[in-house]
Image (cartoon, rainbow, N blue to C red; front, side, top):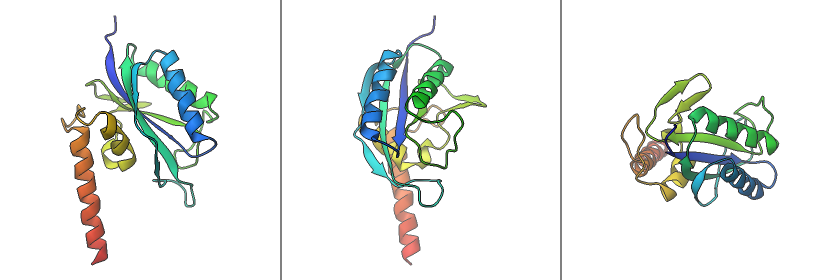
Length: 168
C-alpha cells in the first residue's frame, strides 16, 4: 500500500482563459485523487527562458495529499494538460494553455529521465517560490533542507544584489 504524501504543484499558462483553465485543472486534480487541496493566489509573471516576445504567464501553486506514486501523479498532470489544449509534444520555451509542474513529492528526491523532484529549477524561480510560500512557507526541499520561505528570501536577496550591481 502506498502511503499518502504531501505534494506541491505549480500551475502556469499564458494562452486562453487561464483563470478558467486553472479552475478546471484543480477540479480535475481533485477528481483524479488529490485531496485537501490548498491553492495560492494567481500571479502574473514575465516569461522566463522562453522565446523572445512570449507573453507574460499566470502562475499559482497548489498543495494537497496524494495516495499514489509520483509517476501516477505525473501522468494525471500530463493528461490534464492535454485535455486543456497543450500538445503532448511541446517546447518549454513557448506559450501554452497549461503547465502543471510537480515541485515537491513528500520528502522524496526523484531523478528519472521524465521526472525530477524537487523540480530542478524551483529554487531559482520567483514565480514558483512566491505562490508556494503563500500556502506552504515552512515546507522543506528534501535535497537541501531549506524551507520554501528561506529559498524565496535568498532568491530575492540575490536579485536585489544583482540589480544593485547592474545599476553601478
